[in-house]
Image 1: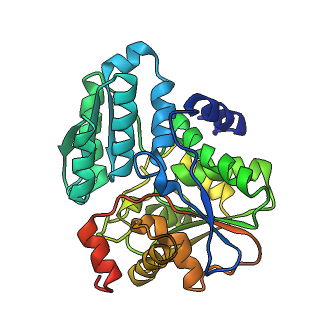
Image 2: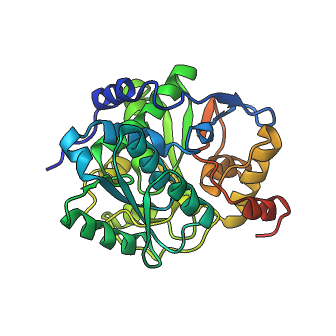
Amino acid sequence: MIASVTLADIQGAERRIAGKVLRTPTLVDPQIAGLFLKQEYRQTTGAFKLRGATNAVLSLSSADLGRGVVTASTGNHGRALAHAARAAGGRAVVCLSALVPSNKVQAIRDLGAEVRIIGQSQDEAMLEVARAVAQGMIEVPPFDHPAVIAGQGTLGLEILADSPAPAMVLIPLSGGGLAAGVATAIRALSPQTRLIGISMERGAAMDASLRAGRPVDVTELATLADSLGGGIGLQNRLTFNACRDLLDEVILMSEDEIAAGMRHIHAVTGDAVEGAAAVGVAAVLAGKVQITGPTVAILSGRNVAAPRFAEVLAGRL
C-alpha cells in the first residue's frame, strides 16, 4: 500500500525547491468578473512541471543522481526534468511519442537531455523507460510519483497565499499529478473550495478511468491540449485515488472551446499559451463553469508551437 501525499510533504517540497523555481503571478481577468489567472506558464521552463521535477531530482541521493534519470513525457515534464537534472549535475533521458510537437522535442534537446522518440503514444514511450530502468537509470515519472505530486502541490500553496479562500480552482487534468498535488494542498487548508479538473474531449484518460472506477487505457488522439494526452497507467498508485477522492467534478472541453480559451488569454495578457493551459478559462467562456465567487484558473504552460498558435488566433483548427 502506497501512502498518499500529505500537506507536510508539499510544505517540505516548497522549502526544497525555493529559489530554484519561480513564484508565478496571479492576474485579475479584466473581462470576466471573479476570475483570477494563475500565470504558471511564466515558469522558467514554460510550465508547472518544473516544480515536481525539481523536487524529485533534489530528493535523490548523490548515488542515484549519478545513475541518471529517465522519464516518458508529452513534452513539458521532459523539459522540466532535463532542466532539473542539468542544474543538479545529472544526466537525463526523455522518451517521447511521435505525437509530441517538434518545438517541445527541440527544447528538451537544447537542455542537454538525450531524446528517444518511441511509437505513437506515451504508453509506448513508457516501454523504453522500462528498458532504461532495467539498465540502471532512475525513473522520474511525469505524475504518479510522490515527490512529483508534492512539487506540483506547491502551486496550491501559492494560490492560497494570493487568494486565501477561493470559491473554485480550475485545474488542467491529465495524469493527475497537478490535480493531486494542488487538490491535496487546497483541501487541507481551504476545505470549502470547489476543485474542478478540466480536460479535453479527445482522449481524456483520467476522466475515463474515474468513470470506470479504475485505471483504464484510452486511445491517445491529436488535440490542441496535447499536454493533457497520454494514459494514467494501469498500475497507477497515487493520482487516480487522489483525483477520485479530492476532485468535486471533471469537465471536458471541445477543440473549439479550447481554442476560444487560448484566444481569450491572448487578448487579456498578450501571451500565447498552449491548449492545456486554456481549458479552465475555456470552461468559463463555454458556460460549463459558473463563477459564484473568486475563481482561480491555472494557466499551466506556454509551450505551443508558433505556427499552431497562429492558426488558433486565425480561427483555423
